[in-house]
Length: 391
Image (cartoon, rainbow, N blue to C red; front, top):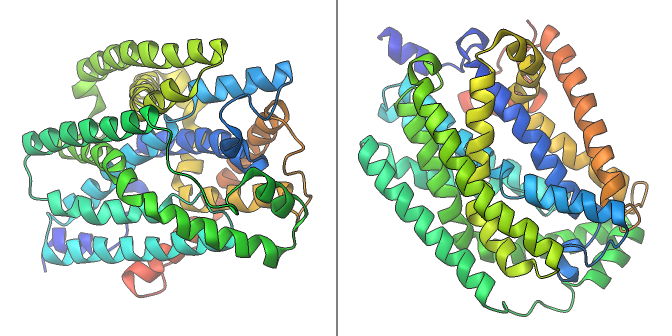
């Protein structure tokens, strides 16, 4: 057995990890929490758009800032990194049949994690769509970089058309149980069995939208795969001009699209522009964050400052699921029951507090253990044998 094939049969060792990728993943987790906590804490998505549920000035500022600076961007970072991660996994085994099969099995396990998360913790799970999109991405593993870029552009175009069509249409009617009033009464005052029953219905109902979500995920996955093929993050210093150009281009698009969204929020007609901003302005802003942090990481001061985020990123699955558990216990009836009672001005502070605790716990955990708890379970199930956990 060759050294390459042997290495491909084992999980990535800590010393082999690319630090900036873990930092970006850790940073993305903060944005994902800031975006998700709006939906954990209230039925804002069912009332009629931003500012329709919370009317206080501080709440409006906090929600507006989250919508413009966070919404659509951080899931895009995670999507890009997801495609990059699959490219790196395939690259370690040179795309061998055994390695492809292992990555495929890894994605099927993630589908299971996502279903359990979506049913028993939070209906807004993203793991299952990512895993399904990852299975589709494997079909592109033999494409050259040029082919991947062509399909990424086509995916972006299709995704933009879907969001534009959604913005121009009134949308389909929702069933009676999918209402703000039902969310409020159930999530705020319901028992766990009552909330579970509603969550299952929402989770299954939302699966209908999965085919429309996949193009938006897939083009970002493909861009991540391109970055992996070109070793952009393994050899950052060789590609600094590319990162700088991408930063400028992304910033121009983000300023235009997110700027239009911010202006629409001020004018009070945010929904049509908001959908387009989410699908195109969000990814543009995502590349600004990716390139900006990558360039900053080349400086010693920023490298030290951003370093702790790598620990969060190494435990991304554990921290993502932990965020859902903690938020459900804060806002749902089987916990503290603050659903619909705490506005964005407070929940943003809560999100930063949760994330701050996760930084500390992640750093301390990784001093004693090789992987996060869920990462260890994922690897153990993937490789079919118990993986070493303690250092």
